[in-house]
Image 1 (cartoon, rainbow, N blue to C red):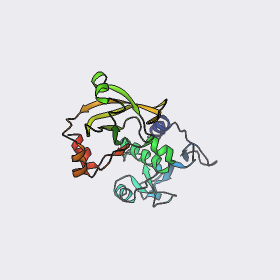
Image 2: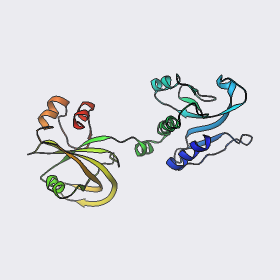
Image 3: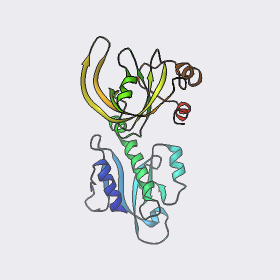
Image 4: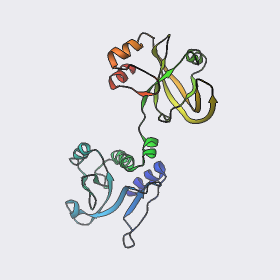
Length: 246
């Protein structure tokens, strides 16, 4: 399983192992390329060190989990221990002998990568988000655009990335969320400037669903979900997200 884990890290994060200890050819460190922080340490550990039955050694990997409650839950599972030779308040040791499923280990690697990443890299690898994005009919007729194409270009906020969901709020006279879309392309360079608008980056959004204007009117957004203004991309409350996906 050690080789499988190494291959996963190399394919997803384009990172190869480093072997910093001259007399230890099993201790492999994986670092971020920018801040040089470790996000995984693979090693062979004596079974007795982890209070496992039997003699000899077991392959294991140390990973950082920055959520204390989640870490406590993990430590109740078979094959997961307080970190060996690292800070036990923030790191765990996961054995690579088949006790813990590969998919679970991949998820923990991803969490460790995010927990140790720079702010810029955390944003790049974060899970998809949902946004409410305003559209002003005075400047662009989005209804006409979606009537003629399933995918259109739109001004991109730096916080939005491919895979995110955007709910397009069409301003007055519509004053309602009209469309659910998926971001299928992002970070497209663009240069447009006038007295009302500056656009430097575009994204492409694909139409997934259209809503009746009465479903998610501004009045309802304000009264039921506490949304009093939509001047730029903003997150979607959980209760509203649930309704939008029904």
